[in-house]
Image (tube, rainbow, N blue to C red; front, top):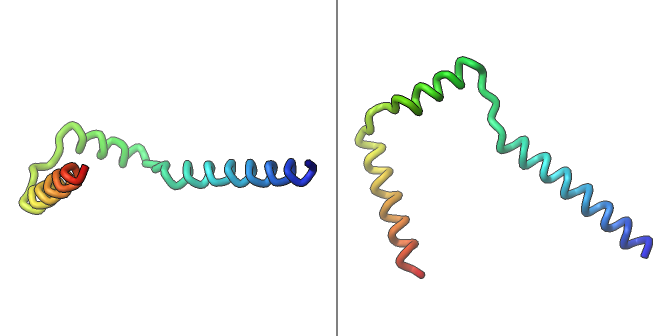
Length: 70
């Protein structure tokens, strides 16, 4: 029973560490200037160029193909 408790401790510690790593890898820190620029771009996005439209069409095509396999 004692070994199981140690194993549970090790697993729990590993899970906590993994959660911290995942959180730190998925968090983006922006400067005030960067955050204002991001908000500006969200509120006033640049016009869609040809490359964007092609990428959007490819995405829609892949999305539609994936949906038809079910």
